[in-house]
Length: 275
Image 1 (tube, rainbow, N blue to C red):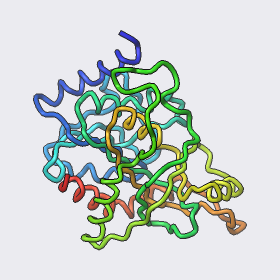
Image 2: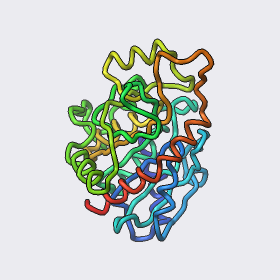
Image 3: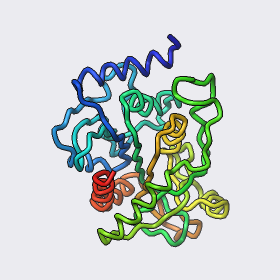
């Protein structure tokens, strides 16, 4: 068996052995400071990443590093409490390994979240933004020989974020009285924050929010034909007109994400209930 396939199936077999006969319907990726949604999952089976064969260990601030299986809003879910990033030094195969494992386990939907900087002047700290499209400045995770059992060589990316799930999110947010924005997420490698000139370039090129994750996971899910819903919590204003003493701080990002997580968690749960 090809090495990448062996790693995927070994990890999936291990996770499956912990779940018994139950299987997840929905996969969830929880980003910086957004891991509290996992607390709402009942009947939890918690699997530390370090226990899963072939899994890397998350080193990012605010990422606990657990795979959690259980029930959320009446559905069986499997949630990543913390993700892997290219800037941690991991290959794209490892960054996206959990999504492949989730596919083998049988998920029908993928929900992804992240903390992001708002390059659009209309986005403020604490806003939650539905991702309608993305601009990728990370290496494409499908580079290399294609894994035919997972999807086609040249997958369509016309609708990377599922229109029906976006419509469901807007409808649900309106019912709950939660204000949501909508925009384009731009993903870069990190780990340095961008310069003011880069933020201006991103805004002028069509980006509304910028981060260092998410897009590789979305590409892998769409390669497999899995519908994706994505949301960003705006944790800092990524503008090009800062005051002379302004500094981007990673801990401040986690604090801002944590303050917005209740709204996002409630919206995710209600959407999942409706699926």
